[in-house]
Image (cartoon, rainbow, N blue to C red):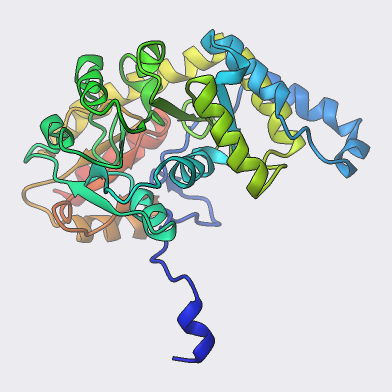
Length: 352
């Protein structure tokens, strides 16, 4: 090792899903199969006539987008924080709030970026094992800790826990920050947003990458008490004052305004997911009850890696990890009905 390497911060990075640059059936990264709201396209055309504005810095307060989100969720603007995807928002939360010498708690099977941020910021952590059915064990989060974070629904399992379950974890952790990562909540049940007035240590994070069809724009947000949002903004302005570009701010605000389109595309994905559940069952797959825009499947007679490779060879991309406890599982994003029919046509032929 060269001398300067001794002082380099080394981490094991998050590995994102493949982004093939050819036409495939892409069911591996939980994107929305439908385009963004029509208002986004109209905003794009309007912005073309004001391209000169791009030479100027964007609004550091992100007021256009923050205001739209505050109106949508009926909260104050001082309760909303936005960032470059929920990854940016969550990373800023780790940096800002998890500074105790006590370990942060999160599940062992969950969004793998949590470990990366903890390692990057030198935050101690403990992974609490989910049970044999992949459910979080809420009692594991009762001991003293330096903070708690978990997704609801969880990833990659797609399991949603009800509001009473979520509140139980928060109620047992009122001296630390509790983050509920709701990237997939729009496909599931009730959000924990209703608990914000009751618990001032709660942070809810969500994203535009899933239900709002804007993964390419990288927009995420947190909703919390004004005090916690102030702390997040203080950290942000000490790190990068201009996190959101002008196009993201304008397009994001338009996406939030179109409530009917949002509801319709979400409904279509849930309907396709419900149909896909039955198709997977007919083929002998097993999986936890899905509550996100993906299904976490395994087959008792087929090796997951072999199945993954066979699908990929036919231009059908799903997500495979081969990690401990989930080495025989594949995560399948819900695509359009046509894309899912193509997937099942392949599986029926492969399993003949």
